[in-house]
Image (tube, rainbow, N blue to C red; front, top):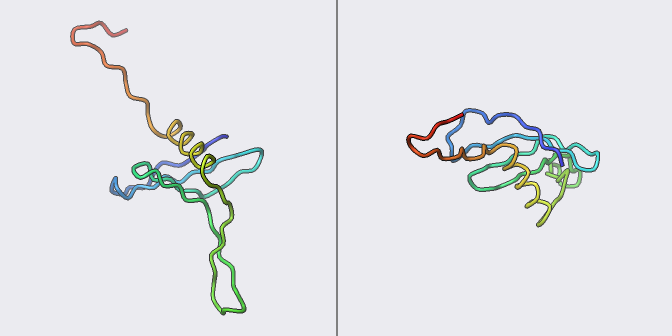
Length: 95
């Protein structure tokens, strides 16, 4: 799995969504969103006109559950969340 993304727009931390794309088995999924604080992942949807109801309806473009979403979250965290820096004791030499 390869994750690519853009930096989050200027938003309050609790509302920050990271827009990203990812590739799985040769298919690239564009326009996904991830909120690091809650862990929520939103996959893309599309809208189509329903003649029977005379309105637009939402339809999922990609569907994933359980272990697939957990694997995606782990890849997102590895890609976007910086690793904590090592703590250096006071007075120690830093190379």
